[in-house]
Amino acid sequence: MRVRFLALLAALSLLVLAALPASASTSNPKFNPPKSFYLALGDSLAFGYQQSKFIANLPTENPSAFVTGYVDDFAGMLQGIDPAIETVNLGCPDETTSSFMAGGCPYTDAGFRLHRAYGGAQLDAAINFLKSHPGQVSPITIDLGANDANSCGADQTCFAGAIATVRQNMGVILSMLRAAAPGAEIIVMEYYNPFAVLDPGTNAGAELLNSVLAGDAALVRGRTADAFTPFNLASDEPATLCALTLFCTSLHDVHATDAGYLVIAQQFWSASGYGRLG
Image (tube, rainbow, N blue to C red; front, side, top):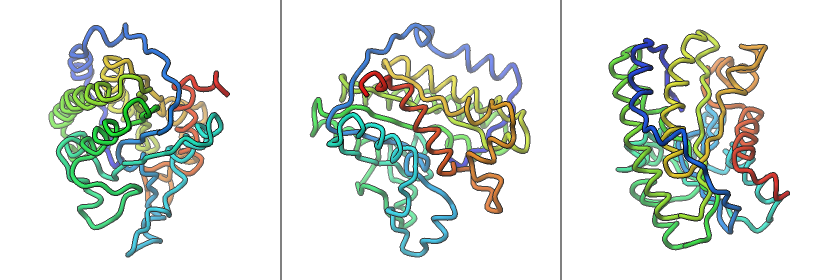
């Protein structure tokens, strides 16, 4: 997640929000309990990336150094229900919704390894896994969309285009996942905004992106895990953002601290409804 969220004009926000499908607000997800496999998809947050660990592990870059992400924490919570649940983490740092669909993974293209190796697009790897394990996968978690906006800088026209791309691509991605796994719990992450440390006004861009992600999730009976509220709406900001992200360190890393990743995992847990099973 290396996106620079922008403070958008009110007219732009209204334009994009108005484009959301009307049925998105009326969807009622069905509860889907955990099964044999937990499938984690997405970008660097799914991978559990932290810049300091990346630097410390150069040049070999062993993915086993990144085991304190939200996927790891959420997997631990799932294993409290069933210790036999296996985690399959396909997360790729720097992934966009477009590269997720078309391949290849930017991280492996740069010569680095993932938690689980695959060739081609992450979407293809996910669908292939679901097809080879029918009825055995739940939950599926996914965080995508933040990197789509990264190249826009302060260009609001570009950002509007990126939001439209996320809406279209995530609609396709989530529909394909749902078709391949009709009995899986699908949970989409709503992003936090580390740049609010410098300018709280940038929260508008994050909220706009999150509204699009929530709309696409609802259309496939998916749920959302809200990372924005605990990170960005705490009463003691910016202290909370500095505690839950690495943005206030010398590296100005936008990724979560270990504590931040745990908070994200707790949001996934809350969204899943699995607490009723524990």
